[in-house]
Length: 183
Image 1: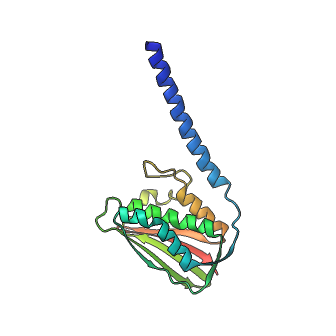
Image 2: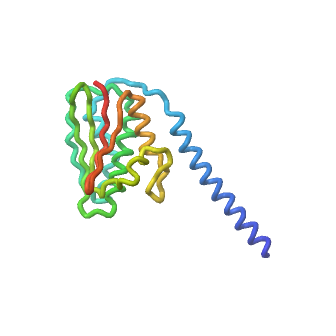
């Protein structure tokens, strides 16, 4: 009977480690096998609106107000599915940043300057601590218990594959992620 208990515990440990390894491998594959963007003209206003529509049930559940002020008079030359992934990743991060906050607001804005299109997603969360700010784009770095640590890395890789950049500006009570794309 004692051996049977030991065997069950050992098998449970093996299954648990296998699940973690499979999770790691799947997420690593997502990072390393990013397909080349299939760019085509996309209405950026509609793109953001569709992403927000996907996120609306979760935003309502979490009682988060969202302000969409995206007003782009030009089409984006992007891979729509990849850009959706980036926007949804950034909004998801904002949702987690607002979990313990009283004021729960996400802002999505746009601007055009110097032949660049900027889409900014900001929230009223706590901001990103200085100690980890340099690590947030590193693969598998996460501060969330259930996080895989690939969302920001994948988002950054997607934007760079489009010839742009993803940056973060954070201060107490506010975090902004800025997507910058060439016109």
